[in-house]
Image (cartoon, rainbow, N blue to C red; front, top):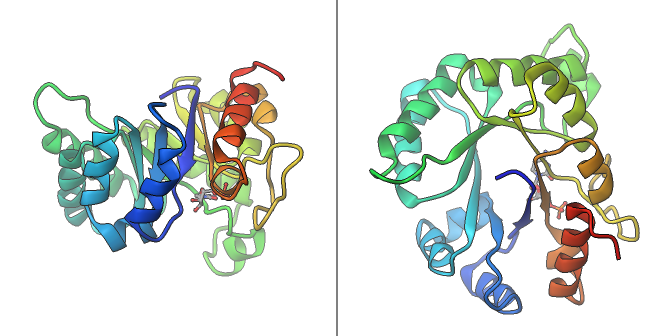
Length: 238
Ligand code: C5P
């Protein structure tokens, strides 16, 4: 899990995913399947990706009552994903139930998927935290609070911004995973990411894994962009 570069497969249908992945030959990848692709294709997309020997982050951000999340996680563990997630706002009981569901659904002899929590979405502003969520502390303190609750509930880490990773690890330990989207190579466009960071910066912050979408999926040369970002992330500078 540590040091992974996770490619966000933000495509609407399986045929586009298969076409995209052809360029990578036999390279074993770590890929992220989000809501759009999973809701359109269902579990068959996971089967297909597993057949191709890729590791899978199923990014469905579960948030419901503990019993429902537990049952849903039992099903997801049976699909053979490597990493899944929940919203920390669902509470400690819900997060603990997610882990229980994963434990019970993991086939004998397999490793249970890692489970991480979304703290505050990166689309959430300081104003929303105070005016809509009525949280009296800063956005950063709210993120830290949620990360602490996730750890207490038995989760393996959080999704966070590269800018928050160091602080989270200084409070919760280096084994607590920080998985960070919003990664942009220095020469690439920001698109809608507001607080982007380079792979080199993420590495320097001690980030556990980076999630990269459009700089690879929308590149004119996806394999070339993947290898270049991977080299920067792994510390092999070109
Ligand atoms: O294309 P890009 O590199 O911006 O893709 C980032 C991926 O990470 C997308 O799938 C996006 O939904 C996801 N993500 C994010 N910010 C978060 C959580 C997930 O960008 N806080």
